[in-house]
Length: 398
Image (cartoon, rainbow, N blue to C red; front, side, top):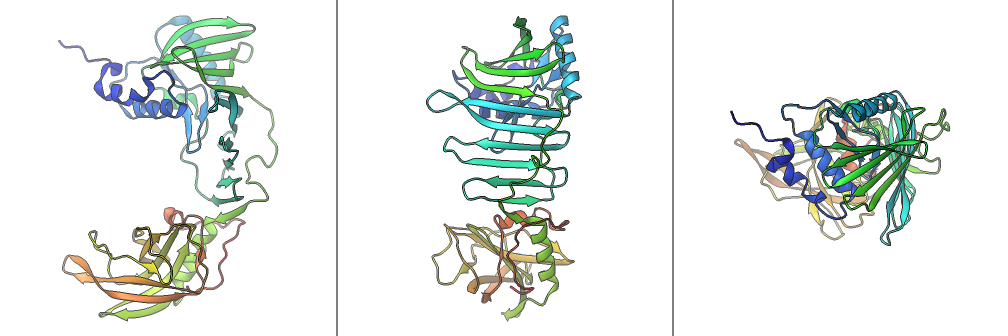
């Protein structure tokens, strides 16, 4: 009977780990490799898995995942730490990483209170990005221009997931358990990296984590504490922010869809322009009537009187206020337009099982809707409860 190969020996996993097979793998490379292994679902052969805390990155959060083998003392110790961590709802973490000169500098600060969370990321150029979730809405704000957004969606994943969510990660191993002053230290190997976890034996909670290459070079340090209270506004966007309010924008679009719009006909096909959304580099025109664009069509929209767009991209058909909206979109370099301006759009009509362009129409746009990211407006086309923010709209007609 042939024995099944261990997961770590499979070509699939070896390929996913390739970025980590270097002297200095980045935290982001570790994150990608760990999440790739998480997506692999072999027949489980494990006892316990632990994620001690988060790597915080600009786009997301990385984690420490521990596969505890049947080493009794270490497994029991980590089990107690995991249990204490799981029941600690308030967590604060400061993350340090080496800059271009090799100096350890603060890059992230995270606050977690149950489902609520907030993070400040500091880039090497000094720009900070503040983000968070207050239990009802998310926000993201950049210090570069004070701009950002709020939305009534939940984040895709919390900054620090409960340890129990990662009970199926194989591959890591406990190297040793030692003491450092008053702290218990668990050294854990994962691929070509080593994680040293410093644990307060009185609380069984991690107080520090050192992430190192196999040769001992530190590539990340996390300092943890567990406050009893956070300030009242830590999970809210900065008061001075210029925020795009996506729930309010969705309500505004629903109102415009219910309004008369601008109606024109060409080639026997009638469309009614309902709304035009303008972002920093993206414009979307939305209408009812006509046919969905053929997948192979290259005809796109443009704004009259300025340079041609750098790329085209149509929004997917969506239903708002009971009406199916079609439309077109384009990307521009540094788009900065306010009404009135003229757009030129292709109109599609039925052609058997496909559609064809029957002509082009121009519309004068007097009241565009301004949004940081127009495509995000349709991530939840049914809308939600509006929150405070600037919608910069003027009337029910585009």
